[in-house]
Image (cartoon, rainbow, N blue to C red):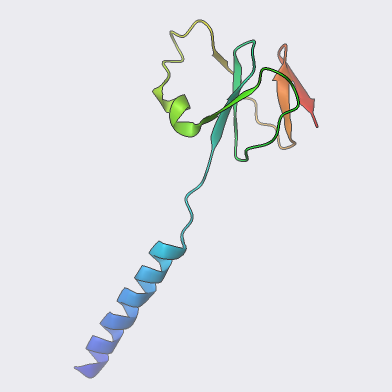
Length: 91
């Protein structure tokens, strides 16, 4: 009986530790003044004027199929950078 209680308590403590140690993934949506938008996992300091960083919830609220001003750039880039006139510029 003590073994079952001890096992249950240890399992609960382990699960509690995992819940508190898990970090939520942060993502951002970045758009330039031409309306080109892309995802990034870090909030960089962009030197290019007209770039705006939005929380990821901003992306989920948009109707991308009907929004005439913004267009989505889905190409994946591993290096840091931004879009300018449809071209990925690394920094």
